[in-house]
Each structure stands twice: as C-alpha cells, then as structure tokens.
Image 1 (cartoon, helix red, strand yellow):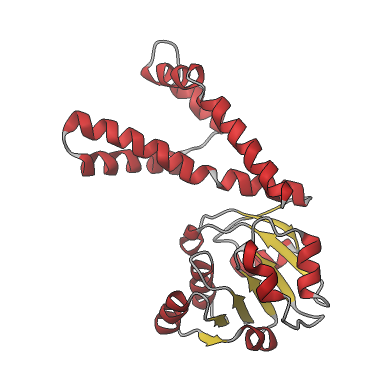
Image 2: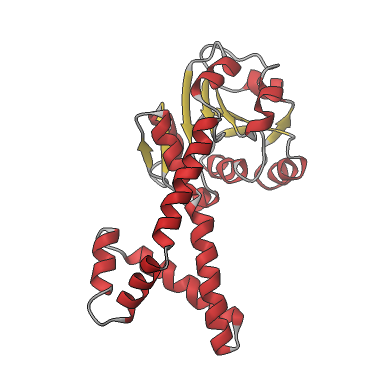
Length: 248
C-alpha cells in the first residue's frame, strides 16, 4: 500500500480519498477545504496536515486545487525527484505543472467525477496512465490520451454531464406538469435513462437507430432535436469550452 497525499481537499478530491482509503492506502490531506477534510478524518481516518507536511510524508501527491489558486499554493512547496504527481486541475498545462513540482517529473493528468467512488468513472489519462490504473482500475477504467489537447477535449466532454442533466430536468418538468407529480416524474425520467444506459450493448448510433425507426415517437424526438438546433448548440458549446481550456 502507498502513502498518498492530497493538496486541496474539496468535492473532487473527497470521492478519490474514500476510494483509496477503502483500498487500504494511508491518506494525508490538507485542511483546505476545512469542512471536507474534517469529515474525511472522522469517517475514513485520514490524517490532516499543512501542505508541505503532506508533500514531505507522501510518495504520491494529488493536486486538486482550483487553477486560479494553484500557483499561490504550489509555488512555495518543495517536492522530491522520486515523487509521483497526479493533477486533476483543469486547464493547468504540463509545463506549469512541471515548474510547480520540480524536481518531480513523473506526472499524470486526469479528469475524475464524483461517482468514481462507486466505480464506472472513465479516467482520461495524459502521462503515467499506469499509476492511475494501479490506484483506480479495474473499478474505474483508465483511458490513455496522446496529448494535452486530447485531454482538454475530454475535459470538455465531461462538461456535457450537467448539460444532459439539465435537459433531463426539463423533461421531468414537462412530465410533472402532465401528471401533477413532479417527484415521481423525476424518478421515472432518471431511472429510464440510467436503466437504458446500463443495458446498452451496441454503439450510441446503433442504439439510437434501433429505437428511432420510421413512424416512431423516438424518430419524432431525434428529428425534432436536430431541426431545433440542439446538436449544433452542443458542438458549438463544446468548441467554446475547448477553446477556453486551450487559452489557459
């Protein structure tokens, strides 16, 4: 088992901490966020320390800071050459990461979501993907990517999750207005999509085409979304998010 440190202990870090603690790793976290670190100390027995003490004690260090504060926190820390670094900081490029963490040079950048704790969260990995696999697979599949540009594109796709949830919420609003039971409408909508995705056997296009055949309500839905500009809005927004990430 490894001794693993977390610099930044918010809602992105917490599921990873719980997953790794359940595997038997020794975890040390920083106080930032004070509330989250206190809950983790109480519930899973992690140690809490100042950032330099976390770095000094650990062989693997996760960087889970918001990009706009990363330099202020990391520039004053001293890393070791043999340390392994996992960055989950969106839009902090590899060259800045290298400057913050020198002389450490073994990095992987990734994109975790909160459901990693339950498994099934794909982890795009730029850098040492084997390190991520050792820590999180097979429960969470690791997907190596070849460049920082490819990693940023995966970050952009992750932003689809709240977008899809927003669409589902609109659908549940419509169903609730028809039935008079908004709570049941949200339950039905959520279970419908979750159950279907869990049962998929073919590709997205294959599953879509199997449902949206001539004359069906499914075809009316897919055609309506296309003619209404939903797909164009999605790709335009993904391109804008990608450009925002590249500009950092």
